[in-house]
Length: 354
Image 1 (spheres, rainbow, N blue to C red):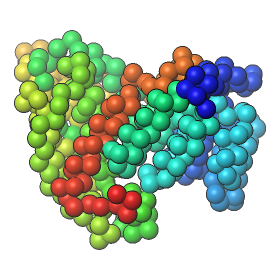
Image 2 (cartoon, one colour):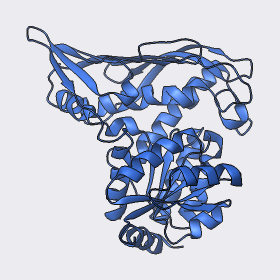
Image 3 (cartoon, rainbow, N blue to C red):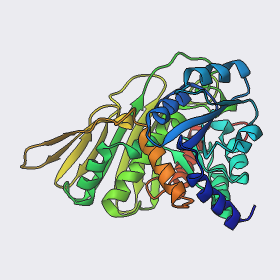
């Protein structure tokens, strides 16, 4: 399909829906897909049109649970889902190692894609998928929902206005301690497991976002220092890294499956600092501290469950015949994937498909 034809298909998809609204198809009815379905089924103008999974019993149970009011169509093959005329776009919720297969097929079929983070386990794959979307003129976005949370509109305004002066450093953490299971997607190399792809992508993507808001663009990465630990399966179970960007801004983060943290984000400036105090990846609170002034605290609850922002952005971009989101551009996704490649290389983490 030519770029012009696929672009027209994406535009048509955005406007083609029945009175029910914009129809989403889900690939992979796992845990994260339930949160997505909850947002879609409560979002005006959108509905869950179909779900696809290889296990018929599992996808049937998923469809039954999310009958709002009618159950979504059930498909056991990806091709059938992509041929479903009720599906205007797909959300890919499979483990990291299987994202590329679904994204490629969807882009070839002219179906817009919102794909769970990390878009791809390597920069080469991320670059391939981004290039494919551009060549075919079909929308693709990594589902980094944090960037669309209401509280980050305030944080972005503080940064853009220079409220804390020049940004000097960024600190963040994201850790929890699941039980070790070598067969789980968190620890299995064949599923692209590891703390970096599952958790560290938030630290890195939001570091990149902070720099874009403060400086207009993210400066080049000049230096990287990495420490960490590996799980018995060989994937990273803990990562501690410092990234130094052009201009001397240092970003430090820790992520891991071997402990707990406050999961905070702190942005340090020449005149003050910004704090997202807990669970920055799904934050509703932030505070601005400027030297000599009273602290400013904001509370911005989710409208539904936090996923609505990325869904609305995807539908808006598709309606506008965009290939890319200005909030979560493919160039950002590819750059972060490159940073993660470099970090994994320092730790000696290798996937079977590297």
